[in-house]
Amino acid sequence: MHANQLTVTAATVGALIAEQFPQWQTLPVTELRSQGTVNAIFRIGDGLTARFPLQPGDIASTRSELEAEAAAGRELASRTRFPTPEPVALGGPGPGYPMPWSVQTWVPGAIATDEDPGDSVAFARDLACFITDVRAIGTGGRRFTGGGRGGDLHRHDDWVQTCFGHSEQLFDVPRLRRLWARLRDLPRGDTPDVMNHSDLIPGNVLVSGGRLAGVLDVGGLKPADPALDLVSGWHLLEAGPREVLREELGCDDATWERGRAWAFQQAIGAAWYYVDSNPAMSLMGRRTLARILAAE
Image 1 (cartoon, helix red, strand yellow):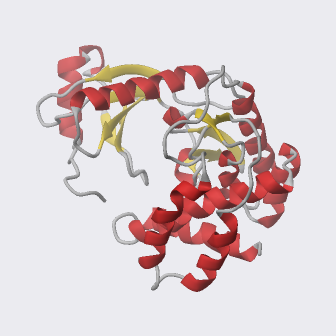
Image 2: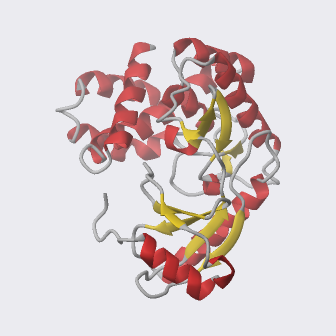
């Protein structure tokens, strides 16, 4: 998926564990099929997972990022009605792998890509509960910083225009251009930041029996536009349950539309960028854009 992507094997992971965490060296190591684009994921025994960054980088900076992810995991732990991974340990470079890595608790469930909850009203209500619980954490005076999703939609215009240039074989790009020209200008006014998970895509959402079973990849927990986590309605839900999500959250028109805009920004990038290297992510982007267009 990436230039210079690192290769991580179960044998390498087992050796790193034996060297750095000998208390777990007898536990089986299993590579997990993942649609993620940032980490290789391995299960350690029944209760742990190890996450290995796929791209090389500065060791100190990467460790700082992993420490920030762990802090976010601790902040979210037990603050919602649904299980989330909790930080356990940070590993360091070793034979066969040159970067820091992390260990978290295992959360059971099937990812939403494999057990599609799109038609489940009960799941939509669960999702609303999760978003409400995350918002209730409070920002503690923090505000959105950086250039990622959740700030100013206009700051993403160059990227979206790049995506249009790569998407002629996938979409009716002129139609998408017209829609984005309207979505990027949606006003936010003085709406304050709230806490968001920030990446509620199918690969980060666990399902069991049509209900929300847990939420993964919690390192992006941050203050941002209240519309940011509404991307979940477009990534995960069909029209009826999506309206239930909106009603449960009490979304006004402006906030709901900005949620559609953030979903558009994420989906247009995933659709073309991963079309060959991560077909599941590409399919998510195309499916989300189809839902967005159907709502026009």
